[in-house]
Amino acid sequence: MWPANYWAHWGVFAVIALVFLLLLVLAFIWYERRVVALFGVRLGPNRAGPFGLLQPIADAIKTILKEDIVPAKGDRLVHLIAPLVAFVPVVMVLAVLPLHPNQGLVPWLDIGILYVVAISSISALGVFMAGWSSNNKYSLFGAMRMVAQVVSYEIPLVLSVLGVVLLSGSLSLNGIVTAQGATQGGVPFILLQPLGFVIYFIGAITE
Image (cartoon, rainbow, N blue to C red; front, top):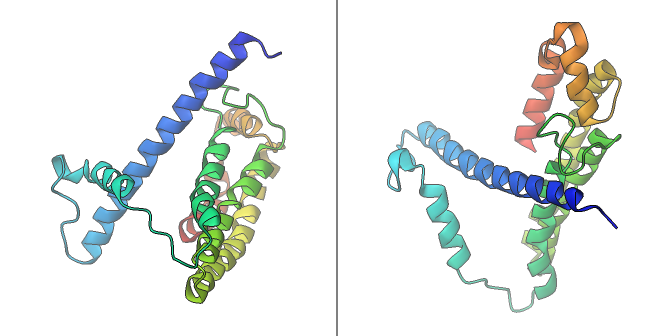
């Protein structure tokens, strides 16, 4: 039987993680649309709210209210499960992030980095399931190409992370944060591993 303070701790950090994730998604959607608009010499979202900051919220409401159309010959069960398979791993990754000194949804996980790499790869299965559920060969080909891209970019991502693991001597995210504060007078690992940061940044964006 888990103590009451454990469930209180878990509930607080679960709410924090979900709110943080949703706000981060809305912010990145707005930022991406503004940057892409600059490429096309356009203004980008500027109608809903100041500077268009409420546009992602309006788009989210519109998406929720839209009709869910399943192809007549598609697999309805896989069609409904695919978004969950793509979204849930993202939330599971947040569970091991040390949002507070040595604290998170999971207070300490000795293989935190390995867990993040493994769980984040599952999202690609959601896209593959979406392509499969449509019962359309072109959708399936597109999903297979996406999965192939994700697998190929996972290699440089993992290799760039290994540099941080070697510097910290730990696979735990909490241990890495602690080591970063104690190593070389608190010098961030991004300065000690600039090439690794560039590789990870490019790989994460392309993935």
